[in-house]
Length: 471
Image (cartoon, rainbow, N blue to C red):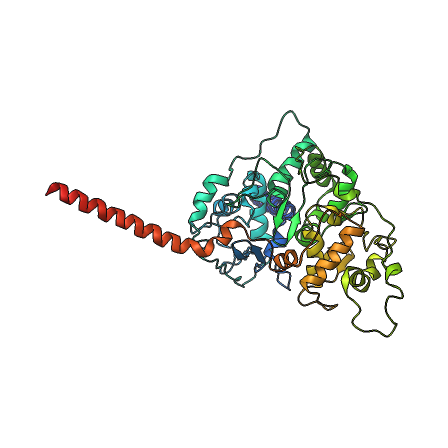
């Protein structure tokens, strides 16, 4: 009897240990899946300060047309992060943009895309952030937008207009690869957030999906299937290469926010997901910009060598000769991009022709690459182009100088129909175009005060009129 009792106790213990091991294994699997989901959602790019910040501790400054928005700490810290969030609260913040205290998030956090994420992915991501991320006891800088943009309650009305809470539903008439691509592009990967133009109220122009839009001083280009304005003339293999490495010879190189997406997210996605994204984009609705007359990457070489026009122009010991687009290009650009604009042999320094940055009808990326440089880490390869804006260790160029270089490059290697002014450079140096709503911001408070006075005066007039009638 004693032996039987011992056997029963041993079996119960082993079963308990087995159940515990299975539970731990299940949680480890969930953490791994959640990490993969968070990587696809590119959480680290925005919630980690690139200036030495700890992972997911927040503090990254997003320069929006309404002002600077600082990302929050999303580590499991119970004092500075999201350690006290329930899964329901986490889900509502991610998919609806509402904090546990009822405050609304700004759509710089792409909850308008995350709203389409599945319950399973949200659950896995919650487990990952609660159990797979190191807590950081550091409160991120607080966002303080000017009035009336600091009234977060107004975002509730904005959400009624522009937040689509419809869960992603697979299209039975499409392939599994297309559906996976649609889920990533319009959901977890939130490509639509940057690459779809915005209206006056900063809502997405859904009639022009993936047709391109400004993101601060950078331009997120048209990635619809149009062969002229978009990526219709790219092969699927070229798109996958670009997503994975940040460059494709004869097409484009990732810089700015796209470089961050490649560095922190896209390079880690499985090839199946990258192919799904590329397949979906290749089969998306084409959107043509009437201003585009030919594909941005179709502007080929013009066999122009900048040095041939400069040699012998000045005495060898002359000073102050680096003036004008040609001389500035020769002095600051030709050593890497070559005197003929062809780039290095291995294209680590890319060609300036057959290059979307120089061929688009929007020259923002050409200008911003000079102002802010290019910094992209993919695997063991670090791609670095120094900036020529404030803080440059190479040489700070003025708005006029950058405009002259840009115009030289556009005329000889890119789209000659585009001209850049010093004002264009100044706008991007200042963080990008200011929307009409932001320009009206100083007038909003006085306008509200005037409206309140008018309403009060009207009420007073109606009251006096009613009183006279009673008399």
